[in-house]
Image (cartoon, rainbow, N blue to C red; front, side, top):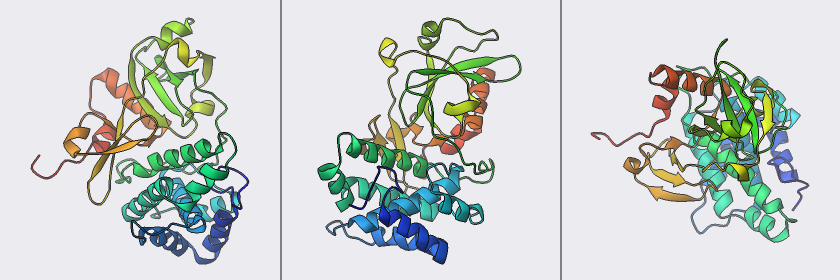
Length: 307
């Protein structure tokens, strides 16, 4: 299938798209996504168009959240001068629908299921699910500036790793990686002195479980140890996704299986999104201060008018 790896750019079609991007600019992104959006339910989404749409969506996600670690160097260099204003709500919505279509019904999906080596199909689909979470978050409003794009290294930590999260000069708490996405459980164990009993830490209540990007799992939150997940399992709560344009919702489980839902059914659930570590720390501080968190307010489900 012209692929040598499960990453979004580990294939010839995606690299051809990057070359087109360098020639045509953002018009190449719109064109790749619109080709997929223009297909009917019964139309066949061929692998080259699917790969190009995924590559375009990855670039939009990097423009939105600043994490360009999954992009090839040529795409990173192009994004350096073109990120501002690129991730518009309309394009993000188009990219979200496109990636979902590839994951649910496409020639590319069939090729991975039929021809991938052991574990490759799952690794490819998990990569797309992670991309969907990055696209699903509502676009920034300007109240909180989008983080500056950085070229980051891949995570060196595994599920079960326990991380120290500094809140200020006196207080810190602990977090634990619970999936490879990575999703991270933030524990309710704020302390001022270092804790030695890691098992006791991971058995404290969990404040929330979030997908966290940036450097949370590779440096900003230092690793202090490892507790296998089977010794203290952490349930992964359901989350919701809401279309930026139509307002329609779906609820997703920890394997990213989705089911339709009314907006009212999503009240109290986390929006599927990738959080920046800085914003997670703000949320923890707000929790202990007993005040509302502006990021949570911003990402709550939007109910129909009058409700």
